[in-house]
Image 1 (tube, helix red, strand yellow):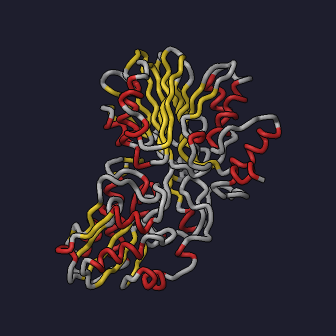
Image 2 (cartoon, one colour):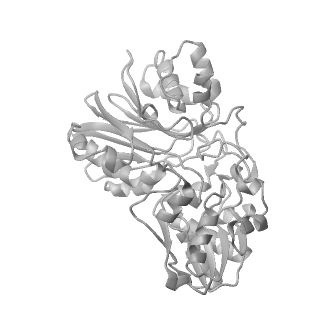
Image 3 (spheres, one colour):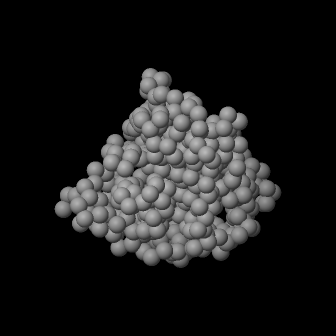
Length: 468
């Protein structure tokens, strides 16, 4: 099973008032896969902000009574969170709101700043007082500081992003405008579209556009800043092309929904290609190919297509439980609740079990046991990602190599520890086959970082700082 995930952002803007809360609900629901820790929304009705944020899923936080409390609005920003910096608590829920003499602001962030600790230290030494342990508040402070001398909110945002390093796809809402920003490397996805009623929609993934009835226009380019206001949309491109494009390849392997299209590439097709490459590089003699729901299914289809081994629905997911890494408790217990085998599909068969990734190795053994208990004769694990060997500083929750199983065991040793007959990973040098290009970040697999490495990478570094 894969690494912990990060966030989804959503922004709405229209010259005329509309049911912003209702549209946010459906858009955030479509982005729920990007974060199940907490969610929030802020809407602007002629500059008056109304917000609601809490721990939990979109359907739990935004009840019918909560949605009815929101006014019609001309702009809105929403967020689904899995935090890669900062603990799981209500104070870290986004969007973050700022009240200032220069005006109100709400900000939602997807990604992770690699220089967050340095920036926060500088701000604290100048008198800033932080109320959260999220690096998003650092971004909000910097924009607010720049706003003191900038003629407009968009100029403040332009100045602020020059001091940020790492991954950031931002949506910033002021009383009159909506601004979206993508970092110069383009680590995290961001796109926008428009509904037939004239509402502009900015979202982490194109699946959210479809969920609210918006037609996809295009991806926000790396380094681009878009400003939405009553008189139209302005594209600021003077920061585009300032750094090599390094889109996170793990978005295609796991993070994104398979029905999304990112950078002109179908996520579903990219995962199928990963499975085809696996069948070429790590073949197995077997009777059935079984994918681990949900993000292993597309790769399993690709493996089956290329190998000629029949695809089988050998594992069924309980549709009423979310991704296991989000919930508290033992992950092995969660796997048993989440997945079960169809015995008639696997009993007495040699099975190729395709999963999206192996990070810490906490669930691999349980997956194998589920199939063994259902009567599988052989189990050959195939993984549609290379081995995780290095920390990620750009949004994937891997802050250290200490717990990565690939740093401790060979594939053969890992297979033995899981009780599998064999194990094969996608070769790192074949990642370009997923997108038919090489403009991506694969640092968690190769150690080739596109930015300088931060000195303190612990997710709880700000909590530790407060307790010392």
